[in-house]
Image (cartoon, rainbow, N blue to C red; front, side, top):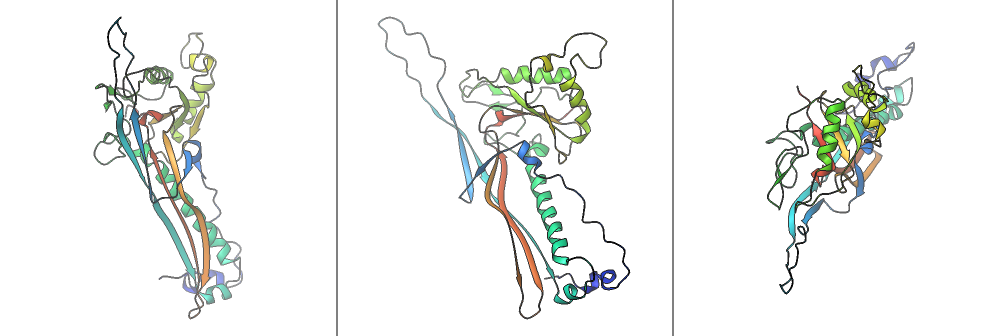
Length: 306
């Protein structure tokens, strides 16, 4: 096991050093909380099954028997919790001879930064890979998270992405809202679904601000009202996520329940211990969690036109 020793801290063993830098950067913290609904877990994994209800009730003719329908399970989504852990070790001599700030305090902050970074990257995996059929994030029905052909019990297909990939603009956002309002359940019955939040990469933050805050249509000379703003279509506004990798992709979180989920199996824990023989002090951080999507209707996405 490698340890941080005096060999890595040569400048800190001598007087005259004016300052240390490189570990004091701010971090984008807990951006996943604005996108995912958190639940706790007490098992090594979680599974959630989508159910199919009944179709439209038929007319019963006089004197005829009652029609009976059947219900069934549609698909199951599995969440496998991962263990994320990292540690570091500092030699006894390095701690004794360092002339400046506390080594343990300095590097425990760096450890927290590393743990947070991994969590934010993993949170965006369903978004960043959800358009890929073979190696991307798949939902319980076997299709990519964002697909034009999510099969349902009724026999038709549901789509949670545009038929033609489009960039974020006023028209594409209106079209997405209309598409979401026409979604059905597994038996083809309309559901009352609406977008609630726009999720975007940093490159689209100014585009989103203009679309969601302008009182009139953007980029045109007409004096038409901005229907998205007037109707409060995206009632929770937009959120920028710095861990989205496609600079043109944009997403809508909907009000469909059991969509984007973050399972917290074990919260972040830190600990330390000293080795009697070497005098080295070891520090570690550990947590267990999983990110995913149960019902794909909880989110709509477009990869952008390029």
